[in-house]
Length: 86
Length: 550
Image (cartoon, rainbow over all chains, first blue to last red):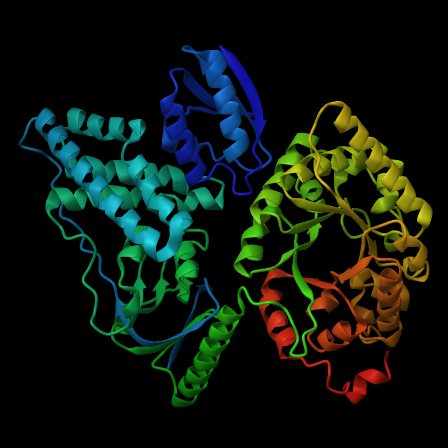
């Protein structure tokens, strides 16, 4: 299992569009991805409504957990995804 | 005449008959006579065809309102594939022996209620999206037509709520404006209305008797007049005509140079207070960002924002502006802008106190974090850095030395940095008086007329009792500006102005004559200012009133 933390910079937070992109990206990797907020609430990154339901705002720190599959490569890919889109 | 109020989405006026939009609510039967497996099969078939409808809507929206706004229909398609949503539908079908349409409709209500209960206003607005996709599936299942029939003549549409897909499906040539009872200014429907430039009011309590009546939707005053009096009607018609003219004129200014009739050019930049304002900058066709108030990063945080966080924000702005100049003003906190975690003491005289560059030069750690973030972002666009509240040569030299220190540290780490212009705010009389010396140290000046006026006239901006003494056009202030421009130009420094005076059109000609190189104003003031610039002719004699002042 690998983890990384990321501070959301998008002024709108994880709104519909980036959440959609995230779900798309998460479905392409062979690891199980979980996104968690500082308050402990978490969601599978492949579930759009659950991810939107977290209501993640700009400036919030999220922890992304990558489990199973090619953890090394998928973690790197997801870190880049967050930096580019969120 | 009857008047109803609401919240306006767009400043504009619509005049025409009202038409109440009635949704065809599908009749759903709860209990099924089929097996759960058959009902699930029905649901799946309907879901696929709803997905196809959405794909077509996406194409329509792409053409009409652009990719950003069309994206919602892609999201709708994804929502229809959401595991949790599908599980909920399946469970209702299986455990309750329910029909597919009943299960879809109940699931839509449940998920929508969860979004409606969220803290975040934006997420609350998503409740309508979830309902929208469920309704679409139900309509397919019950064989309802997609959308409602529209009138032949243009109308102001009145509805409880409009979903994004309903908004896009409407024939825009028949739509003058719309009025809804529910919805938020953050909803996609509101966003679409703004993009399509259609006046809209939300939160209006209407009744059935409105249907077919003539009305004036006044977006400026957040109200609608039903069966308007003749006088009001003609006044509003006139206003609407002048709006249309103004709009056409402003649109025609886009992509045109900011040059006076006799050929003098001046740059028009935008002031922004957060990363999200960049959209407005581009929409109004500004040539750059003349003042990026970085303090919002600090004021919106609970603790000092990290280097990485700041870097990401600056980088995004630089990239979005795509090579146009972005002037980032370093932290200007203190006085009327306070953040608790700075632990600043209460001061007798905060405007003359511990603020801006004074904090940065004594709290080098805070300053360096920001400078490193700015330097790293400079590799991604045309970033300039600007120091506020300067009164002495020493401050500028110290700040530059710290900047140099940061550059060396980053270079040693192998981090890329771009070419960076250095400028200072001229907002104290002291800086004006030594502008010749300061100009030798920097690439540009930017006049901060709000503080410059306050310090020159010794008038506290925060004290409303001094309003009668406050004169933004005071000759002392205008001479300070003139002096700064001349001193800057003598030493090869370009000079801009980013205070509120920049948008004051009674001074535009004066500023051009003074030789200012750039004016930076709020995004909404850009187009009117450009129109003004293009109407001036400096080769004609100066207006008499101005001469005595400068």
